[in-house]
Structures are given as C-alpha cells and as structure tokens.
Image (cartoon, rainbow, N blue to C red; front, side, top):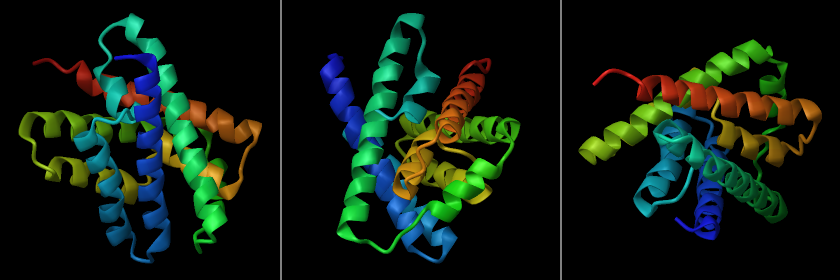
Length: 192
C-alpha cells in the first residue's frame, strides 16, 4: 500500500480509538463504556483503517516494520487531533486522573499489561478475520479495558487529552508499543 494511504488510514484509526476513549470517559458505567469503546475497533476493521495494535501481530517480514512507524505516527496524529477537538468543543471529559494513574505504575508492570493487551488485540483481529463475528472484536476490547491492560494508542489519546507531554509519558508510550507488539507476536507464533 502507498505510504501516504497508510498514513491517512492510520490517522483515521487514531481518531476512532480516540472516539472510543471519549465515550469511555463520558459514561459512569465502565462496563457500558468498554462496550461502546469497541465501536472504534469495529469501525477500524470494517473500514480497513491502519491501527498499530491491530497490525503489528501480523507483520511477517522485517521490511514491513517501517510501515509500523508510519502507522504509529498516524495513530498519534489522529489521537492528538481528536484530543484537541474534544478539548476545544468543551466536552466535559477529563483523562488527567487516568493518565496520572498510568504514570504511577512501574515500567515493568506497564510492559506486562501492554503485552496482555497485545494478546487481546491480536485475538480480536485474528478471530474476527476467521469468523466475521463482531463478538470477537467486542469481547477482547471489553476484556482489555475492564482488566486495565495498556493499549498504546488509547493511552496516546488519554495523555494528549490530559495534556501530559513529558519524557516519562513518551517513555511509557514506547514501553506500551513494545509490549503490545510482543503480546501480539507471541500469539501469532503459536503452532498451527
């Protein structure tokens, strides 16, 4: 796929994850919020957008890794622009408490929680691709959110919305990206 198309589809994916994050932050019932958040991934999958956590588990060759960098950049742009829109529109949502809580975790814990999210994301995409059953998208999303697993792209949105731009927050995002990738690849390497 053309690099510009990858970037644009990645920005759209970042927007959709940020929309999911916005609705999650907007409702008091976390079960309902996690269910509604899954609309973001459903849209990404059905529209063919490029989400890092949905693609990294399926990278088969090293030459495809530069595309992951483009996807991460596009996902970040999408989450950043949506955070600006949410803030600019004056929506009564805040992620400062959530962002601070995430930054209080030990980096090793962040890595493990990110790996578990990577597993859930890989299973969501792989099972959906095999069955076309949306339950396989909804359930893993709800599981990773309710369990507190770390989704790097959602966390980009939460940090951007909270205005948390520090060396620590970017370092944690890198750990999350690595963890999401490791978790996804561990399940991709399973014997057939």
